[in-house]
Length: 452
Image (cartoon, rainbow, N blue to C red; front, top):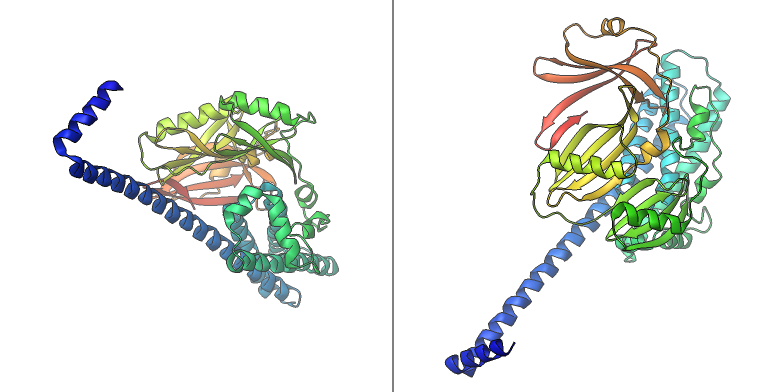
């Protein structure tokens, strides 16, 4: 320190007070400009995030409004052809709205209940479409009653969301406030919006006991319970200890308990939001918002890191299905494996930062709800299923796969990977009925392989 002081004195004597003052001013100016740039970048990033959330909410509101209008048409139409096209529109828009809902920074307590209702709307539309196409005898009174019930719920949701949009855009409620405070602020805002209808956005769904219709999947859709959890309940303190061990950090803070379709504990772990199940303490969701500035590692290392992370949570019998690289991150989809059969219902998504290989995001709800030991018994042979495929398809690989249906059941299929000319396809043939359940086109992009 003494040597440094002497050096500063010598420099001052050599340059003079005036030049030293200029140098000091220049240094302060450079530091000020540096922090101003950081602040500007932060403001731009925050505004982009706000804009993306507003766009998602705007699209979500548009989808809900369109669903309401289509269902209003269903209340009066008697023409099967028109009913089919309207049901197809409801089905498509319900799935689109689920996608937009998933991008909004709302807690699982809010999104799960809305998501459950939208899923039921999608499932019911799909079931009715199939019944009409198969010339099934339908109970007209039951259908009308169910459509009325669905319409009433979508109407309440539409009003609540439009009022929420006004709160955010006209009264200055920020998305980060909603995210940080969770259900309390959101529910308070919605209580102020419309006390004459539902009061809270989740109220229309708390007393929604289900729709009864003639279909193989109606009951289990509406009373769906997580299949991978036992009845063992862990305490908040046990959850905190568990997270300290899994994340190898002491920076764990309990935030709140959430009582939705599944009971969760929410914690802050370092800079991440982490949700674990109250039953068994399994990882349900992890959300991190760090912006990744550059790419330093390759996809293979990121995938290995994701597998190692899941292994810490005793999730090992999995296989990478697809991945996509974007904004210096890699998002990987994993599915469970049982007896060499891939179970696409048991899906886990993991996002990895490509600068340091750390895990940024995990979505394990599909795995939590669907993973269980199945009885796998194909009725027909692979060769018999192959005969149902277009002979022009050059088959490269075949395997057994359990795939989810639009009605949230699952069916055992033969998965055929093949190509026609330069186009690659995945074709799924039901092992029992031999009908074509799904066809996907595989597209190789710069970010990875997409199935559409």
